[in-house]
Image (cartoon, rainbow, N blue to C red; front, side, top):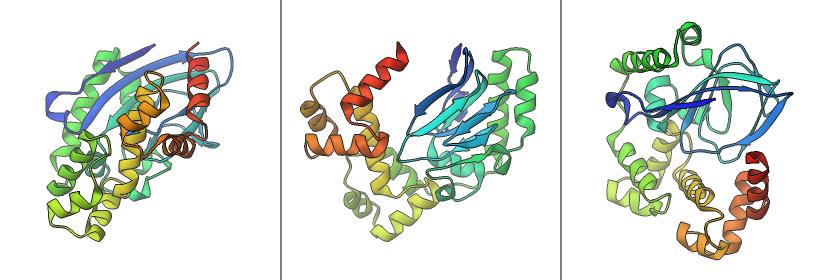
Length: 251
């Protein structure tokens, strides 16, 4: 079972989506997941996870430049919140580079009572409404982020990572050093890494719909070998193997 909800209108520039999930399998289930263009908050209702070999219950994962391996023992139930990276900086009130390429227990950044309240709620609709209330309260007294940083993120996001980093700095009137420092603090990764991530995410979404050469051109890679190299860097697999593995999981 998998449910998706869009957050309240006041939250939609901060929260991409809410998810509710429940899965029961005959035995342990392992998956390669991510990377993604959102910061993930995973709230577990009575089950634990292995995340790259580390035991986690509820946890938060920052932006990353590689896939993560998750495993549950045969049952998983809970919720996931996908946050815009700069919004996560506001909500967690911590430098985002401390979360990059890793996961941390939920209680390090958010009140663990949130999980109990959601688990005890009688319906999924109630749970989604509770999340709206929680995040609106959390944002009420949160510090602002740099509007220039938000503009640069949205520019990169809109171009799937193809906007030149030097041009972003020039349009903002910032030095590259300043742009890099703001990205690390409020997004978690350097601008170049964010651009690579967004470009890869688009390529992954389009993979299988056209030839690899066409895909490389469409997504802004210098050539097909560059595309293959990036797939290996992000997933540890060639594009062909990645598609085969994905098809096997779906089947």
